[in-house]
Image (cartoon, rainbow, N blue to C red; front, side, top):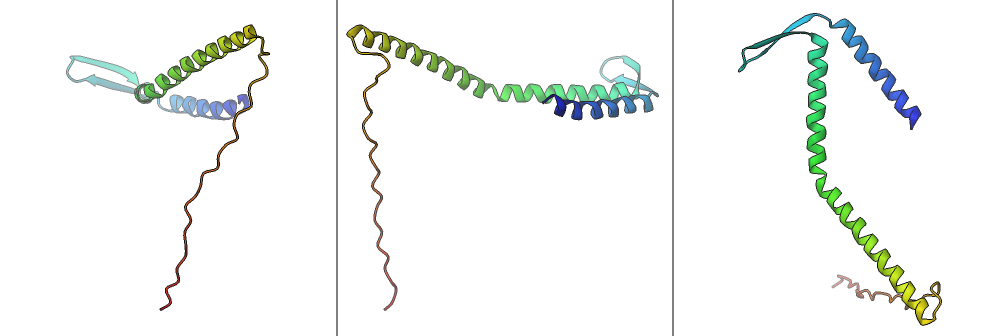
Length: 124
């Protein structure tokens, strides 16, 4: 994973550095409803807009994934509750004198019966 990270990160960082060096010209940023004008380099405006867009997109994705995080937490709580029940059941079985490692054999699974179809010929 480190190799993949370096293979992707180093070229992207190099592109950003080249872009920043090539676009050092001043840009006047006018924030319209406010009486505010800022002189900044072009690369800061472009890379800043890119960063803001990535932050907004990441936030939207994080919010939309909330349902799956809630389901994962609920599943984790259910799994721990079932583990506690299993531990209590094994302790109760040991208290009765049965060894905990030997569980009764489960019944054999039943095969589902499929409907039978009869092919009819269309000869007349």
